[in-house]
Image (cartoon, rainbow, N blue to C red; front, side):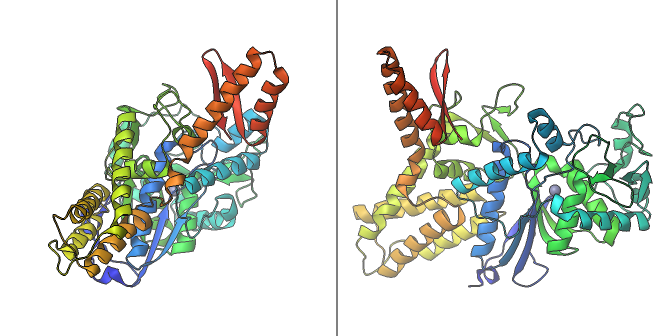
Length: 493
Ligand SMILES: [Zn+2]
């Protein structure tokens, strides 16, 4: 079904600051690239929000009948701690601190990332390429940028010449920055850097002798700069110019700005027609941050094993909660907000469960096709999921009205209502059907609590063999008990 021919989708383009009618480069096909995680720690809930926004976008584009090639990369090398190209590679640092191989770090956190996304019912992207798998492409790209006069080598590192680029191109057009302002606002790096100008960014960094992740190149042993991988991989899999590039708002500058510069310097073309940025996730009105302790990870939110929320929340409730805000708004995660979403989600599911038992009438008192178009209009308006959800609740209201006898629907209209609610709730918003799965998190937490109580009783009776057995058998299935001052808590590995 080529629904996209009847539905006029508009997308807010971060580059122009306007909602634009979506026109694909190739009829019926969409190329979409989203910057994936740097796999040096457990995935951050804020990143989950970004990826969930693009999961819904991916689902809707597919529903409209587009053939979508969705590329989401894994950054497994080259992401330094500091945007000014100083500091350690994040993965190398973690490997050093934990005394394991960098690729063990990459494996551990890639698996964690996939597990969380599977639990939250994400569709896998079409291609999930890695930076380390595309070193050759990145070296070729650097050579082209140097040949075109926009890159220079110093002491085994290669930098992008932002000043030279800005003479003929517009550096800062995505993030609406001017090079003069950047010059004014950049601190000098006290001779730490070989760059001609502090605004230049690394395409290739020389590897010091102790640096483990290193590859041979025309400029000596080293590793690629972070911005480069996305240009190399998006070009390889989606072409020189493609339809949609997405990511978190925090990537707009410098990361996406540098991607544009690299593409224009290498190929002479702007890479992307529609730039999309998902906004930040806060908790209790404040930025999530490890240093202030205002943080919760996805597993803790799902298991209820945390001191921020009163209970566990199911994958569907988390998805429903996130979809109740536009992807372009800052979203504030609160216990009250999640509870309200849980109520709303349950109300919608209860109404949808009733639909098969409704009696059809000879005529309809509700215009179902008009309602259905309102659902599409919401999604066509830059994927406005909160308005879509309001329309789904209207659909739930129709069900209750027909049940009470205050409205009527024909067999055909009942079928349209049922199919449309299923499509929008499950296929597009990605909610899960199975009610048992919804309460799985609650039930797990409740079950482990029972075992913790039994273990406490065993200890009180000095039956240490039994208390150790409970602890060890739980550990063998990945549930680790931790005894603290305020009692026993658990983590699910
Ligand atoms: Zn990227």
